[in-house]
Image (cartoon, rainbow, N blue to C red; front, side, top):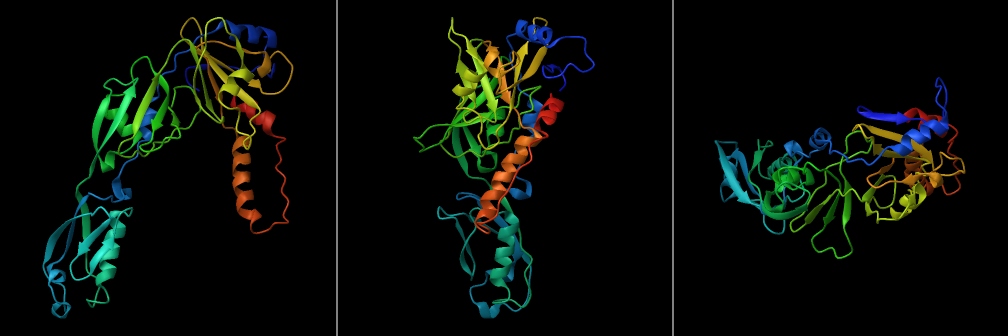
Length: 352
């Protein structure tokens, strides 16, 4: 990783520095202020292109033969002049099509709607499929609020093709310079809690994907505080957690704040990122089980630390295996499976 100095506490190959010295070097560092990876944020941005799906309230325009718009089917014998036909998607998700009647278009792409219209006319009313070309001429607008660590928090009116987390952050002029690592989305009408999204952070191997938003959602970007620590990755509840003065948490306790690690992925290592006095970032991975000095139970977490339980080849294999098992169990109840994890130690260290 660019800009991050990694310490391998599990290996002394080709090194004259002992594990104890490496651990001392790591323990001297801290705290860290993560920087949002804006380039990764933009690469993850959802774009409509040909993938946009129509929603109620959109205004659509279709260019199709004018002869299709006459009131009697008997008059339709051939294709004539091309004319635009404009209609609004109703609250029930349908649009009226001359002669044919209403067709359901909500949740479908423009390409799919074009094909549906052509199929509705051919072969029932015309001898050959008509040429139908459509586009969205006016998107439905919805209001979404964003609070916290953005440059211009507030309530924004978004077109239906802009209803994503990244687009909303861009409307709010981006993340503040002090940074942020976690976003909470309070869904409209959802009283059960928030959805948590982890922002991409420079130097961390944590995947990020843009999130679709709905009208009335409230997005809260949590501002970083030096007296907190962050837990992200393969845990049950990523987040930023308070670090009260006079308290000391070890790595296992920090993971407990995040609800523990994902039991299906069963990661065996966690990486901790912290900042050195010269501003550089240092990281080290720690075993989640064991009693040696470089194990999780013996590492004291510092305010500002980022604990990342990152994906490895082994954890990805376990998650995939669990999905396959759920699918195949219904097909073959007597099948037995075994996952070979003997390569995990080597894989985890190589990723360090």
